[in-house]
Image (cartoon, rainbow, N blue to C red):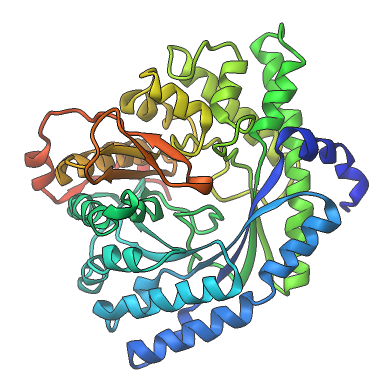
Length: 451
């Protein structure tokens, strides 16, 4: 059984190396909240989430004080709203705004689940739901949206991919005065998972229990610090150091997750092992890769170094918990990682290299600012490329790009907080509109036929 003595060494990591519990996320099923009208459904959803999550923030704060480990975010995810509002999809925004109101009143940092699962086809009600996303994200502060457009079993819904390019553009336009920040709360997935505690992609899967607690741990600074003690080690030994460090980090997350679930009367879900960076110096995934011997992230060798890091983190974490899930890997969001930001500012990393890196890490092209005049078809093509990587490699991939209105390559956009800042990066000028315009379904790969 876990006890405090098992995380004594971790306390030093908290004080000196930026270790934290990045999020305690409560997943809540709202399927039972559907009523005969949108107004009544929104009221039922509000009451349900308010009741189940009312103690989330004070419980997380108490655990943080008790164990001396910062818990950065308190979050909630709900059943995909498109399912709950299938009878009145045009009015789904009422539920979205009710959820945002709950988040504000309870002090929840982000609330995910304004989502649709359309990886094999788009039902009529889902098509109408998608059209509500831009306005709802513009009118809310803490609500997050996600759309799953592909899977390894079903292929890629290219009609949905084409539509999501337009929705991303519209979301940016409606939040233009804030740098297109609405797009920071919108992610497009392939192979979305049901137990992801991280935003903007979290939603509560229909196969989950009524109320679940999932925890995301993070410690890029801890891993970088550990590698400083073995500057001459070969890569095999470096991987062992990362594994041992990930084990310690995950044990801390397991303790917090079990305690939080017990105190909240919820089921303990998973610990997500993902290394999630922040804009703070000393808390960067990019700097871990440079500690392994790269002059700068983005140079040749970056993908190999990231593959080593991602695999070692998973191996170490799996040994520390029997409840590993979510995304579990190393995130490479540009605006949220000081090392990535600085490399992009110097022109040392671009979309092509970032796309290659997503083949070996979690999750995808994340928090990337692109010119505001980027065509919707180009955004759709970026989504299609990333979805193809996920589909063929049987892994979760995602796209969260921000076409910043009025900005061009070389400009910078400030989002603030954990969302950080980002230099506007170039996209390929070639036209993919005819390809995207074909629509249809990209068939699943041959190796998907398993049963």
